[in-house]
Image (cartoon, rainbow, N blue to C red; front, top):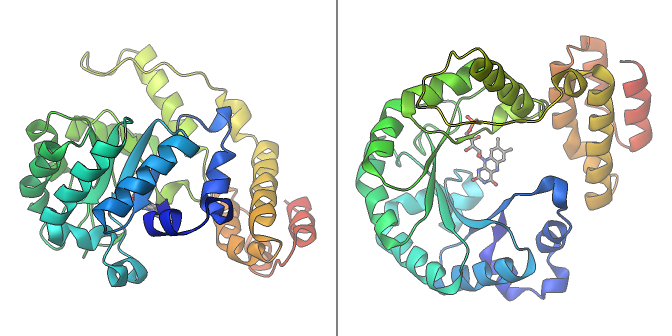
Length: 296
Ligand SMILES: Cc1cc2nc3c(=O)[nH]c(=O)nc-3n(C[C@H](O)[C@H](O)[C@H](O)COP(=O)(O)O)c2cc1C
C-alpha cells in the first residue's frame, strides 16, 4: 500500500515504499500495488508512476482501511460515505493507466447492505475487479463476516468479486467459496505467524479435487506444492529468521521491536511453550532472536 500524495509530492528516489516494491522479484509475482488518497488527479498520477516504475499486474484503490489515521485523513473506509468522489477517482485513474483497476472495500459504514447500492456505480465508473472485506467499518476486524451479502453482490455484478473476511482454516476457505460463489479469496489476520496457510488451503483443495468431492462448477485449481516441506519445523524457523532479517534490513535492528508481535504469532503457530513466548516480547536484535530460535 502506497500513499498517492507521498508518491506524487516526494522525489521518487526518496520514496521507501517505491524502492521496496521495485525490489519485488519473480518469486513474489504476480502482485498488485494498492494506493490510497482522496484527490482524483493525485491518485491518477500515482497510479501512472506505479505502472511505469513497479509494473504490477494491476492497481488497487484502498477503500477499506478503518484506522484512526485514515479516518482523520479522509481516506480508506470512510470514503464509502463519499461515493460520488470515489466514482470520480475511478474514472480519472482509469484514464491514466492501461493496467486493470481494482478496489478493496467493506460492506458499508454501518449497514452491510450499503454495498449493494454503491458497488454497481463503481463498476459503471470502470472498475475491473472488486475485493470485499465482509464487514462494515463499524465492525472493524472482528464482526462476524456477512457472506450472505457477498453472495448477492457476486450475482449482481459482472466483474470478479474477491471474498475477504474470517478465513482461518482450509475448511473456512471452502465454506466461504461455496457460500458466496467467489472463486478468489483474500486472507488477512490468519496469515500473521502462519504464512503457510496459503499452501495448506491449496493442498486441501487439491486433495478435494483429486477425490472428486467438489462440485463440477469449481474452477480447475492446479497447484504445485510440497506440504510436508512447507510445514516442517526447520523451514518455519528459517522463515522466521528470513522475515526478521528483511525487517532489520528495511528498518534497521530497531525494527525488531515492531517484529515482536509477528514473532509471538509465529511461536503460537509452532505451539512453543509460554517461557519462550515471554522471551519473544523482549528481543531487541537479531542475535537475541537467533538465541531464542535455538531453544525451539
Ligand atoms: C496488520 C494488517 C495490515 C493490513 N493492511 C492492509 C492494507 O495495506 N491494505 C488493505 O486493503 N487491507 C489491509 N488489511 C486488511 C486485510 O486485508 C483484510 O481486509 C482484513 O484483515 C480482513 O480479513 P481477515 O478477516 O482475513 O483478517 C490489513 C490487516 C491487518 C491485520
